[in-house]
Amino acid sequence: MKRALVLLIAIPLIWVLFHFLSGGAVLSTGNMVNLFKYMTVTGMLAAGMTVVIGAGYIDLSVGSLLGFLGAVTAWLLQSGWGLWAALLAGATLAIALGCLHGFLVAWLRVPAFIATLSGLLAYMGLKQYLANPVIPIRDTTLLSLGQGYVAGIPICVLALLIAATLCHFLATRTRPGRHAFALGSNREAARYAGIPIRGITVFAFALMGLMAFLAGLTATSQLMAGAADVGDYQEMYAIAACVLGGTSLRGGTGNVWMSLLGAVLMASILNGMEQMGVTSTVQKVILGLILTGAVAVDQAVGKGKNG
Image (cartoon, one colour):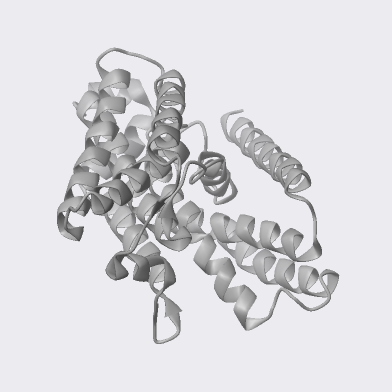
């Protein structure tokens, strides 16, 4: 509750601060709508990443994976597939790749860092091959996901809320979700309690794959095309959002809605710097410092609780 209160106070203060520093650009209606539109991709990834980190793992592949899945969907549509067939194929591929990561980690005992780093490189190469040149999206239904509005609310924001609600429900109201956080909290205790560690590991990565697919659809529909650079750095943004929202990198704790607040906080900082004219290179340096600081605080709090 304390962290939620801090974030809920900090976010508006950041808006006000950057509003004055940018000469009144941040709190304009258009900019605030864009801020929430473009944090949806990070938010979807952060929702899934909360469960993965809560289970004691990490997934570095999701940025490249979302770009690859978006490119695959765009390519299928361009090749004459119907929308629903393309979406079903993309979702199936996403879950299958998530299960592959889980299999590598749970059965072959490849560290999650290495398994998903390998995925990052592989999916980056695949999306660059598939989406170079870009693959335009012409399906109006898919385009509405990134471009459309319902009663003034961007459809992609509504999609984020639905995805986050699903992840929160799975994490808190289902046995696999609760077991995932139990696994991250104490692996040995989870084993002695009879929790199926391999199955729970696959569950966490499969859910992450599905969230990457939804994020990929959103990103490509916002760009109106599958492109080679879609998803770049998004894995870092998602991890940063989770950490800012209080998800411990040691595993065992995390809350999907708090991770979304972390995503809003991070998007607010990046948006404010953009409105001030800060270059993208400097933005990345500042984001790195923020992430390092958040992790340092997490480690310090963890040591305090354990010692």
